[in-house]
View 1: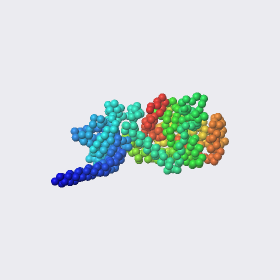
View 2: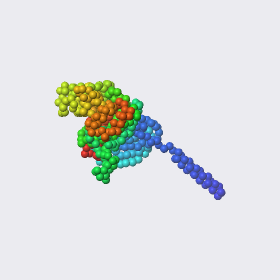
View 3: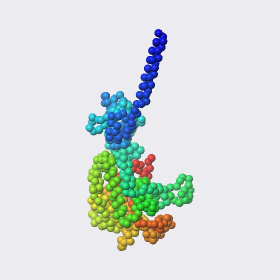
View 4: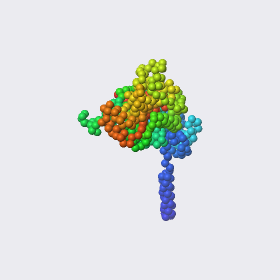
Length: 482
């Protein structure tokens, strides 16, 4: 009898252990929820699956039996609706808090959103006090207001859209150059050259060095342009470009100026005329803009509907029409015949100011316009001499666009050694740029290039008035936050 009881106990114990092992195996083999970005979830990826979404709460609505959240992780303008039992509500679940939500992705009965996440678990990763948070739920904040919070403005719809557009525009620029046979060159940020000749340079010296000493043996500065280094490379590669930060020490806090900004610069060897450059400028503008509009449609629409209403029609007109070309002399004639009272003079030989550039754009139908053949004395030493008389001009070109003025500036480069040397001698720069003269001695070819301010490009296609609203961390005179 005792043996029978022992046998029964042994069988029961074995069965219990087996069940425990089986349960452990089942738990171990349970599929881990796939972590989805919000953009993937709202597109219907993994519909019906157990998924995990991580992001920040954009809205909270608690009802008697249900809790509704909108969660966004920055991957799209559209947020993901989360539906949960009211039992999962928590006082710390507020607007701005960071969460991790696990549940089943299902079709939504609401036509406004295709899918929703039926939450099984909501984990609060980071708390946010909505009373102290400077951005308020369901309130549309203007760009000027959110500019006061550079460390937090990326959490607003407008600025997160801007950053996605900026990222896609960067990709679009690189794609254009890659598809058109350009080689990317990483030009240096630290240089001894003043490419523009304007003297607006940031000098750099390590702390602890005496004033008469130099870390690099010569004075060094933050670059104002990668052009001269691109010219060097154009002696071995027929098409090169660079895309990186540049610095100008302009003592200005205007809505047009930054101390640090990004430049797209290209150099084309065997260029015979300015048309060889304007084709690249126009092609890049069109290609990049069409790419951005196709890949960031929702974000662009947000700007054109709520931030700069009516601007889309202006951009569409730019894309539909070819960019006309006028000479500087024709531009001066147009300005002199106008009834506008300009603040700056419009005599031949003057540098075109922003007010002049914007007027010329409107005169030409409010579409981008190329202005060519500027006075020789207005351009840097490397601009090609047209050797024309009596109006002495250089083979230089600017692209003027609506709302901004100058977007691109470029020129054919002076490839003739004797003329280049004479101009450098006249400026007292022959020794400084002896290496530049070498480029003309050894296998020189006619060539030219241009630069485009990337932030100005974003202003142009979005209609944003202040350049500080199209860059993540604006640096300008007397202000360097973060």
